[in-house]
Structure formats: C-alpha cells, structure tokens
Image 1 (cartoon, rainbow, N blue to C red):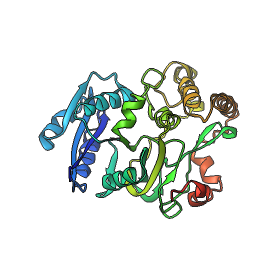
Image 2: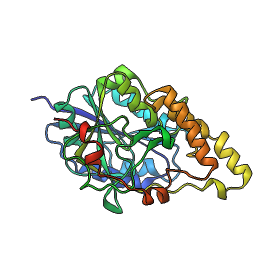
Image 3: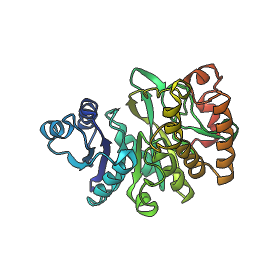
Image 4: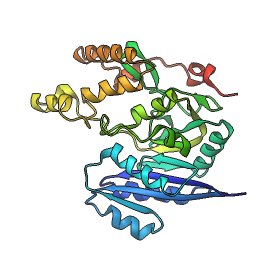
Length: 308
C-alpha cells in the first residue's frame, strides 16, 4: 500500500523553545504508512529559532519571512510550500502545541472514514490536561458571536466525531483537495486569526467539519490580553480601530462575524450586540463570565451532531 503524504506546517515568531518542544512531539508521532514532512515558517525571529531548528531537526524545511506575515500570512506561506510536495493532507498546527503519538493517525483515520471532511483535534490545556481548550465553539447571535466553553473536560465530550460549524485553527487536518478548491486563508481581512473564517468558508463550499475526540493535542493556555478599560485612552483607541492584528480590534470582530457567521445578517446582529455588551462591560468571552455560566456537557449539546 502506498504511504499517505502528510505536510505539517506551523508559523513562528520568536518562540524558539516552544517550537523545539513542538518539533520534539512531531518526531515521536506514529508514522506507520505515513510520509510526514514538516515546514516551519519563521517570520523574522531574532531569538535563534531558525538556527536551533536547523541544528536539532535538519529534515525540517524552513521558510524565512521578514516579520510582517503574522499568523495568516505565515500559514499561507506554509500551505503554498506544502502544496509543492503534492501531499494527501496538510496539517496546520500552532507551534505551542504538543501532539499525542496517535494524534495524526487518528485525524487521518477520521478523514478517511468520513469523506469530504476537514478534521480538528481535541485541544487540551497542557497545565490542566483534562480540560478542553477552544474546542467546538457554538454560534450564538444573542451573545455576540461565537460562544466558547470554559468548563468542558475530556469526559464531557462525545465519544465519536461530531459535526461543528467552525474549527479553531490550533490543529486542523485538511485534505489537500479542500485547500485546492477553497484557496488560501484571507490575509487581507484577517492579518491575525485567519482561521476564524477559513473552515466556515469550507463548510459553505460543502466540506463537513468534524472534531475527532481520539486525536489529542496539548496547548499552551492563551496569554490574557490587557483589559480595554485599564488601557490609557490613546492605547485603547489604537487597539480598537488601528491594529487589525489586535485581539480587541473591532475590524477583526466585524470581519469574524460577517465571514464566520451562519449568515451575514446574523453576523451584523451579533456585532451590534457584542459592541453593546462591550460598552456595558458585560463581555461574555471573559474567563470570569465562563466560570459563572452553567454548561451542559458537550455530549448533550452536540448529541444530534455525532457521526454514526
């Protein structure tokens, strides 16, 4: 049997130790009947990332950027390089990830079992390894857009792959045909967070989005951004209106809603609601809000989305 070709790509900027840790986990994955090749897009790192990779992982392909690619441009550069190797699958992964040994194999088995599917891994926090991280957001217009879960664990999710409307981009397996049909991430509208519209775009083009519970990835917890109300006014205005890569950017939020929502109308309505909540200081995305909310198990919430 011919081996399946898998390209693993990850963009990085000044995260040498995290990247080396990520590559060590890649070196330990089950490669039986798989040809695995890794591409790192080093976007202008000044901490010796490229040199360290070349020394410790000479088989890794390195693409060097000028420091202006950000996440989306870096991922696109990696995808374009990966396509030249004519793979069967492209695995896009954040470099602050640790993959379980069977992760890639389980993702591929899921993609093969359910044709025309893009498959996301089960993301877990590496400092609390039973807790889910950014898995299976649910669209809720009344809450201002995508609603994330804060209390889910490895024991509260479905035991079989389940269908979702978006896959957060920490670790996603794309059949190469999906990328050839849909194209690259939108780096014009999304300097950062290009994954916010990528898998929804694929879903609208007829690709099924699945989460595979057996494919586990341990992720670094997100660094909490500065709170808007604690910023000087000049810095606040800059973050809201003039930095599209900023997590607080209203342009990013509007685009995320418009191009990720089930419909454009729902996206606009959710943006208005989000902005009103922002002014009222009732942000539903804060960990404090999530800690107070009562969450049913995802196995119940997505019971009708589980594959058969």
